[in-house]
Image 1 (cartoon, rainbow, N blue to C red):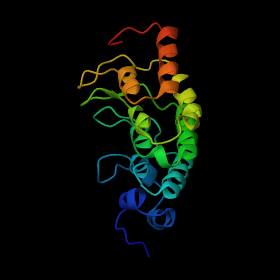
Image 2 (image 1 turned 180 degrees about the vertical axis):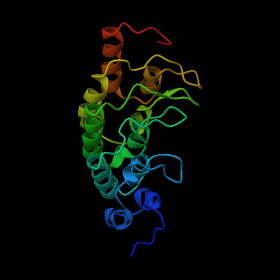
Image 3 (image 1 turned 180 degrees about the horizontal axis):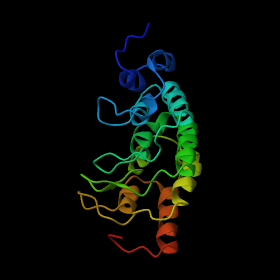
Length: 183
């Protein structure tokens, strides 16, 4: 018997088995107690295996991949917020989201940050990040030169994080799309 009272809590905190105990058809579309969708909640789960399995389950059940919060974030925000421990799973979910039309170009409105900013805080060999970088920087419309509430563009932030591969890919992206500051 699951220790969680709601499917949302099980998605965020529980195991895959906890989640399955509470899941019923139709929950993939319901708003959670946190006013997000269940997939958004699952992506917040700190248990990498549960996070991946629950997310794949919900995607296969038809969860809304294009979900957006009132703050403007998409599923990429929670995906990248906690994805540093499971790069392979994060890459796979990113690929699925992009294939299904999720918006990676969105900004988190309160701070004006790109939804993928958190990947530059991962303590992972940057060479392992290249497949994820390639997925992200293959998408048109990224807002790399919009200043956040701290006055930094995504490119400036990455330079401060000392991620030379990401910096190079971002600089190439800026040139390719002829981006100008605040564009």
